[in-house]
Amino acid sequence: MSKDKSEYLINRKDNQYEVVIGLEVHAQVTSESKLFSTSSTKFGAEPNTQVSLVDAALPGMLPVINEYCVKQAIKTGIGLKAKINKRSVFDRKNYFYADLPQGYQISQFKDPIVGEGKVILDMPDGQKEVGIERLHLEQDAGKSIHDLDPKNTLVDLNRSGVALMEIVSKPDLRSPDEVNAYVKKLRSIMRYLGTCDGNMQEGSLRADVNVSVRKKGTKEFGTRCEIKNVNSIKFMQMAIEYEANRQVDLLEEGQSIDQETRLFDTKKNETRSMRSKEDAHDYRYFPDPDLLPLEISDDFIEKLKLEIPELPDEKKKRFIEKFKVSPYEATILVSDNETSNYFENVIKKSDVKLATNWIIGELFAALNEKNLEITESPISAGNLSKLINLIKDGTISGKIAKTVFEHMMEGDKDPKKIVEEKGLKQESDPKALEALIDKVIDDNREKATEYKSGKVKLFGFFVGQVMKVSGGKANPQLVNEILKKKL
Ligand code: ADP
Ligand code: MG
Image (cartoon, rainbow, N blue to C red; front, side):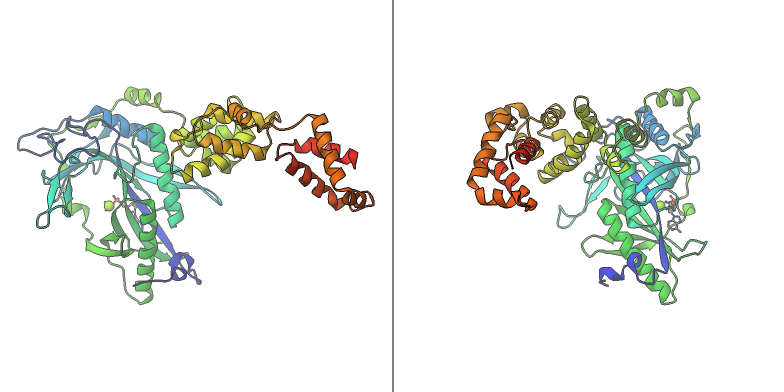
């Protein structure tokens, strides 16, 4: 079923249906070792080199909780303004998978470590709050590799036992754009906290996407389908659009939606049924007898609160109040810690307005073109503030500054040196400018006469000529003043 974009539900002319989305985000906990063993979590190691006897589930092995992972989960809960549960329980979720040697996953079911919270989204038409249902800790499974051996499936257990936080949202999302904003905001909060690196290419952040549709104005939710394990925001959005349309088509044909688990085929851009949805009781959850319930004291939580840095929402508020940047600019500047640090370093010694424009405009475009992160910027914060000061004090014009900026992008050079070496300094000496202007007027006698007899539009022509003759270096303000006098 291939569809023309204009037919997508979200853009349908009659616009009768709305889509309802809830996300179960799996975020890999930033931690050197796994949730219940001391094996390394380092990405990209040789297959099966980071597997302890616990991870391989040899009979009789006992899991031991990694306190650091517990701290990371609590910190994330605090970042999500959520309730931290002082008592939580690890359960066995039983199912068979070739890459799950235990035959069950240790997860949390009835009593998760973190309860209800919220995330604020900055949408073009204002803020939107998305509820968090819960956050629980669980272990990751290994990885089946199907495309290495022509006949066999291989299993790599390096990932087996790595700590995941499953963050379950309420069904509060209403469009692919909101999903985009939600995942980015969640990632930004966890990166600020240092609890998940959010690297989607390496699978550190992936989501099960629950989608249903309903006629607008209906109170009840429709039956949902769950699209498993989507590992890019783009794919989440594509899967939602496809799935919502599929469901509307079924309803329009008078059919009903089966609650199922589906897969998103990124090549065909469609979702496919994987299995009918299992219910919680299918997993035969029960408390893991090898692990005691987790009991956390108030003191433990209070100590962790002291380690929480300023988070994006608070930083945004501070930037708007203290630096008078617009909400739009603030949202961009706080999107990650590195960008906001860079910005704050630049404005330590230079004008805020110019700095904001240069970072969001010129610098981001240049970094984007070279596919660089802000931490890899060839222009240091110190040198960008020097460039801004050269504009501010009139040494160079904004236009020349762009040339200097291009030179700076080629290597972190002091802009003052570039201006000197290339002779780019703005000409602000009135005597020198007068000489230039006299020559231009002399070369254009006729036009000067026309100007004097009332053709004032010609003023722009003279300014242009002077700028041209000076190689763009004449101080435009002075040129204006002197020209007015002379003409
Ligand atoms: P399960 O493990 O069965 O998938 P969870 O409680 O872990 O159940 O997750 C359910 C997810 O589905 C939540 O993110 C929730 O917001 C979402 N959800 C529940 N009902 C609907 C619905 N009708 N439409 C869309 N999403 C829904
Ligand atoms: Mg689910």
